[in-house]
Amino acid sequence: MIARIARNGSVQLGVALASGLLLGLWRPELAAAMKPLSDLFLRTLGLAIPLLMFALIVSAIARLGRGVGAMAARMVLYFQVMSLLSLLVGLIVGLVIHPGSAVAPGPISINWGSAEPADPLLPAAPPSMPGLLDSLPGTLLGAFTQSAILPLLCLAIALGLILRALGERGAPWLAGIERALGFMLRLLRLFLRLAPLAAFAAMAFTVSRYGGASLWPLLKFLLAVYLAALCFVCGVLGLVARLCGFSLLRLILWLRHELLLVAVTGSSVAALPLLIGRLERAGCPTELVRLSLTTGYTFNLAGSNLYIAVALLFLTQFAGIELSAAQLASFLLVGLITTLGSTSVAGSAFLTLAATLSILHFVPVEAVGLLLGVERLMKCRSLTNVLGNCVACLALARWQGTLDRSQLAAALARGRH
Image (cartoon, rainbow, N blue to C red; front, top):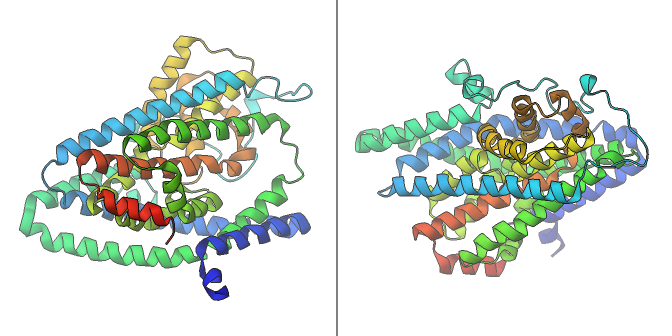
């Protein structure tokens, strides 16, 4: 019994989190030195994910049957509606609770022209424009090594369509890609067994860094993002789940191990290999799972959209700038475009926010450095991204008529492995 509990992934992550918390409180200087362990885990995962996503999309599109156009249209429509709703929810929460107004007990002097990143988590110089040309790598190999997700998706879709058109002549190539895909999935599942070590390091560093720090100016911003995520999950995703005939709460319980993994790593893609098998066992067709999850990790990042909307209002309110209705509308339009090139790699939402501000010019782009202090605490962002993509996969399968509802009901009823 004890051995079975010890092998449980959720228990291992829980023990790692508790150990990291204790180390951060007991020996902060030693805990701060643990950060490279979590960084190494995420960077190694980040190197493998683009290749995995490429193979998944090629395989999914090459094996799609008739009706692919209708499914693609539904997918694009669903993703855009969810993106718009998430931006709207973020704006509404930000306008209601005013996270950037009177955030500190005393006056705070900020030099907007010389704001510096508070944490070396991300590159200090975000791109000035999020244009598609700027995201294109110089070589084909660069698309994989630089994690250039958007051009990689286009290349995978094109190759998948070519193999689909070739039919039997392309079968050997497709078989080779799928053998490589199976090997990568098995390898990643083995690698993810190291997640408790990364969780320990991340928690130890977070507690040592922020445990005694004064985060008063950012407390309302942090709470606003979490509140926006809660409203979106309970309101929007809950409604979609109800319309599709399943319980969102049961789905969360079914995915609790994967969600915990995402929470401790801060990366939405960390659980991708596990989620694929999870949703297939829940009654979704394999091709739809692979296509919707991989494309959703670029085009359906509701949690990142919520963060960007709340962050925009926080920075403008903090600077004493009141946005007009026209400016808010322009943000919605620009946000729908800039988020298309976003990715689910840890911290990418921060760069998307910087790119959005560089277009809108509401506040200096350097102002985003104020938010880096709590960047590692934005766990709700990744969790909402993952949950939104899982709900999208089930909803699309339901609307396509390809969802095995009895298999889904059985899986959600168990709520465990």
